Length: 269
Image 1: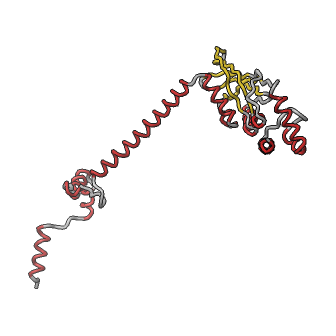
Image 2 (image 1 turned 180 degrees about the horizontal axis):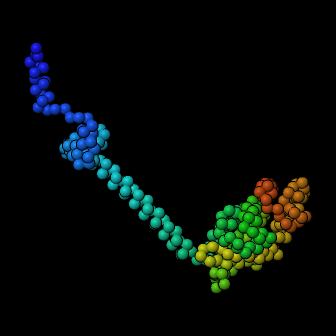
Image 3 (image 1 turned 30 degrees about the horizontal axis):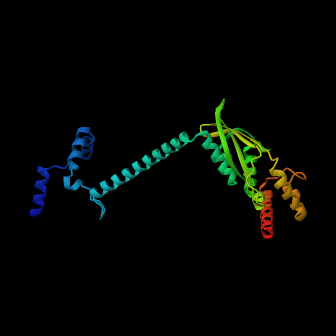
């Protein structure tokens, strides 16, 4: 005898028969049924449900402020770079050829071979009393620094040249040896001749005259070295009297000898 539960289940089966699995699969594969089913089984989220809550301590307002700050910082960097480039270009344009040559002399007086060499273009024509390349000029400039050589420009004249502007300068000069014996800067008639274009030196020629300076200074210092440090002569000179070696090693010896020479003269004064 069927219970009341069995009778109820049977009634439900008759009113809602279970579909055949094969036929059900066929129906579900139809596009219109699939789309309809998908739409029906994925209900649209409410506005409240779609809102993504930011992490604790962060709000949309704070994010907008941060984005604005980053954008402003980027603008400041770009504007700053543009201003720096414009300022550099303006400075280069405002520097006269004579200004460029004076900057070169300043580097030379400081014994700054790297800066002096950097002011000359690649392939520049160089004749600096035996130094004919940028590397040789840098070494010689450092030698000038080792013995305290300094040049003071007396006068410069500018004139047109094929590769820019020619700057022809006369000068007076001294060094640590001459200052030690109380000799004022000497103008022997030496000159610097430059050709400058676009703020760069394309040619440099040094006509070094030492009719007064050499007998009073060089020809006193070298014999002192020979008398007191004969073993250093081959280190600092490539011959017996006149050609200085200007390697880094030799320049260090030149400086040591110069300091000792000056100290001895001052002690005996």
